Amino acid sequence: MTRHSIAPRLAIFAAAAALAISPALAADEPRIATIDMVGQGSVRAAPDMAMVSSGVVSDAKTAAEAMTANSKAMTAVIDRIKEAGIEPRDIQTSGFNVSPRYSQVKSKTREEYHQEMIGYRVSNSVSVRVRDLSKLGTLLDVMVRDGANQIGGISFMVSGADKLKDAARKEAMEDAIRKARIYAEASGAKLGRVLSINEQDYSPRPVMMMARAEMKMADGGAPAPIEAGESELEIRVSVSFELNQ
Image 1: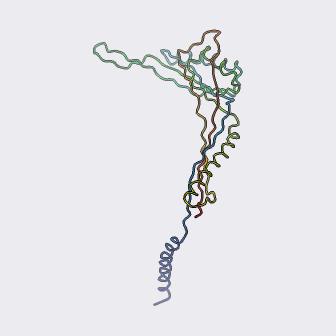
Image 2: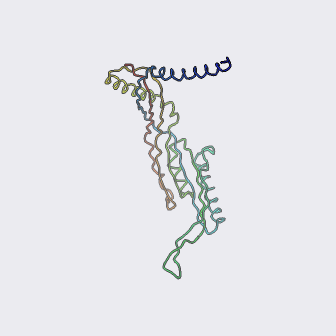
Image 3: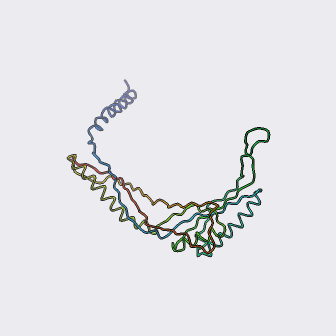
């Protein structure tokens, strides 16, 4: 047998030996016992800003007529928003749509109904950031009085919320450690090092206020009463700990 024929056989034997040994080595490695825990923390703060969604819906027989009426009304609304002290940087178009309008029409020959196009609808909406909440009620008043026939919602916000959440982060971590230590001691183990930390940020839900085209404000009426209340800034952390037996 030549040396050239022996070499491949030796290589195959070495590979087979490695495959045979590796499972044994893997089985000998100690498994790390772990415990996963969720901690929660929160802080409360008074909102100091708001985001308002407002717009104009216009109906007409033709798309051009609906567009003309909508543009005129929306221009007046935006002008009044600016006159109420809102800076242009805080006004942003958030939606624009042109769509046909249909109505159910009874057939002249049979007792059935069918859809018939009766005109067009143009809707245009803006999102307005209000940095001074004392202006919010007056702003809603002037928008509706000067052409806005749709108030989509109000979201209250807390500026600098991320820094305020630092206290909630500490509280959430302390909560996770406290609960993990209870489970560890109950199982006869000791809490070890932290293996991983994952944060879950829960932003406050927006406060919604809906209004439709029939919403009207009497001249000289009081501004709409708006209460900002408090927002809860909540943090949750998922923490994995090592358990020492």
